[in-house]
Image 1 (cartoon, rainbow, N blue to C red):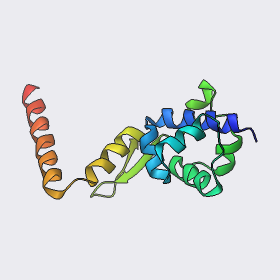
Image 2 (image 1 turned 120 degrees about the horizontal axis):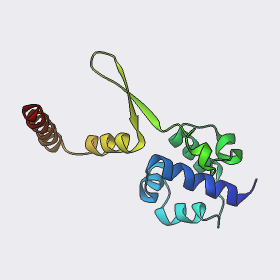
Image 3 (image 1 turned 135 degrees about the vertical axis):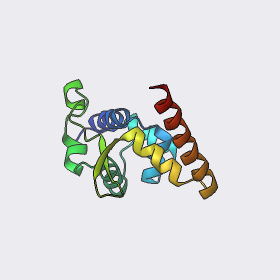
Image 4 (image 1 turned 120 degrees about the vertical axis):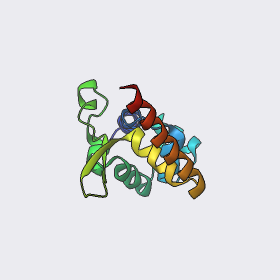
Amino acid sequence: MSESKLAANMRSLREAYGYSQKYVSSQIHVARQTYSIYENGRRMPDADTLCNLAALYHISLDYLLYGDLSKSSASENFVREHSALTPDNSLIRLNGAEAKMLMDYKSLPPDTQKEIREYVRFKKYLLAKET
């Protein structure tokens, strides 16, 4: 397995999902500088890190290691969506950036979350008034 192929796959996945190196490194429990070394092909991640990467992107380990994810045609095949259930059990799809936004929201204190919900309701009200 070529380290440069893995590095290209790591970069392609990260970019397809719209993630920063800082975000990916925090999710796989390594320093951002360490992740950068992996993504530049200067070092091979250990087995645990590879498993964490595959889990983050919802792909198999062999696809991460051996798939050709750097081709532009393959970028359309990345699993870019996450799923969430609404209160009425409807399934909604979220792309990587939307899922990250929700994760960021969930990490905020409850009073800040409440402010954000109120702001969203206010913006919806204003938009509805315009139409």
